[in-house]
Image (cartoon, rainbow, N blue to C red; front, side, top):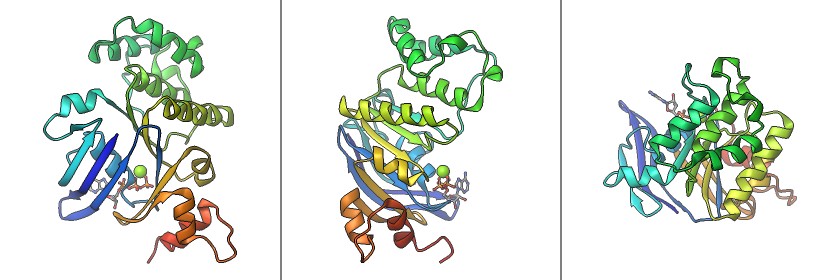
Length: 243
Ligand SMILES: Nc1ncnc2c1ncn2[C@@H]1O[C@H](COP(=O)(O)OP(=O)(O)OP(=O)(O)O)[C@@H](O)[C@H]1O
Ligand SMILES: [Mg+2]
């Protein structure tokens, strides 16, 4: 469960996110969409406690992120668009390190199937420098999933993956949602979002302009002819990036 109320994020005097409220329940996947610079990454970083919010409140798995940050962060995983890895730790050592930080006992039993699922089993002894971009992304995902988080934030999880990787990632997100995880993800790949998300929230210049199930948002911004795909909805709702 995620409950966000009146979230704002300022960079100096620039307002990147304004008075944003929404909640996501276990089993739901919320797609955060919006033009470049709309505030998606800023929102996700605030939700994950990577950067401080300037105002409002965030509750993750019933823990207030401001007053109970350790418990809140223990319940969540954040997957950034640019994976940050340790240059001198192998794939195996990354997982062992994360297991230590999150106090995951017998982590090999979880890491084995995860590496298999993410097709990294052959690379366990490689350093990040010897991994492709998509593999680095998968290693960051394996590290994030190791502590079985109840709440997951993905920033552009599908970018950089090959077609099979995209399908596996979609399946993996859907499976975790079915198992009760609460998921928020941002993406510009709207046709893929339609297959994964139960809900969508459209941001424009830091302001929420639409939020609901895909059907609800489509009804609000769908074309007169009744054709509803998220791309049409997005273009109608955001009206391009220049206005
Ligand atoms: N560290 C920062 N300092 C100053 N301004 C920032 C910083 N990070 C982001 N911004 C600004 O905040 C706004 C929102 O940026 P953000 O990265 O959240 O957008 P986004 O929706 O993730 O965009 P994209 O689709 O390009 O990833 C932009 O105008 C950006 O220039
Ligand atoms: Mg972004």
